[in-house]
Length: 403
Image (cartoon, rainbow, N blue to C red):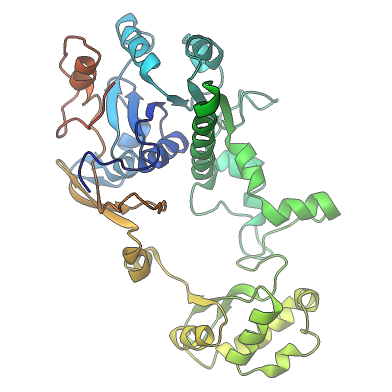
């Protein structure tokens, strides 16, 4: 695919990205993967906080690079008249503005959604925050841990009978980024016919509430308050991590047909009989059923059981470490690992894109993340202004794009 070929269906969409850390940058990375051009507006002299997050390679943050690849960077102080003038020239050229400041911050700068959308009818303005722009928590600070705690996610995760635990990834941030990218894409679609932009008020806690799935369904319907159940599904049985001869194995028999396959694969036809004959009886007797399954699993290794059960039509898998995920042949075949040639850090491997859309070729490489303010000269030239020297050193040629 040539360098000029569209990267995705959002080709031509220009995003002013005022976000930092994770939720916002993850949203704009998804938009980049869908073809949009991202201009990252950063604080002069400091930039995105994640520029200081480990791990580092040759003094640069690999973490920052992983969620900001392909973007351009322009450092602007929105309290400085000179930088505000530049920002004002960028606004009419932008299709989307995304920010994740605490509600009210952009208003105090004179760039709140009501002000900007009155001036630019087609602007899609997305604000990502912990709790949204309304409600009693609106002005409270929020990080992923706080949202997982208040939103109940911690209370349902952890060892069965034990204390709740934070998830191993920042789901509150990541999911908010996904929802924000989805909402922006929907607003862009609507704008094609209406010509009007939208204000998107994306709250991490709102998103997490939508992800609570059956735990919240049961609470609202029956009053049952879910507690940590380990790896076991709170309703479906057997749907858990079990112990085999040499380690743990995941088994998911989510219906009667798959359960029958499991019993056949285990050579345990007796487990199809009462008290395990149907979904509800297995749910009521999950502890006894797990004991029987593990009694049989102890006879063979995880690898032997995975092969045997999968051949019988019963979903089963080993528990992969991050090292094994990085080496997974299926993920490699799906293009889920790409290379980045960074002028300072050298070659990097990053996750690819989960978007597989016909007509857009798979790209095995990505451009590097930008140094702070590296696109300043190019952006000013695109605006018809006299170029200035970037405030920080450049890293390679400026990313393609016209503002």
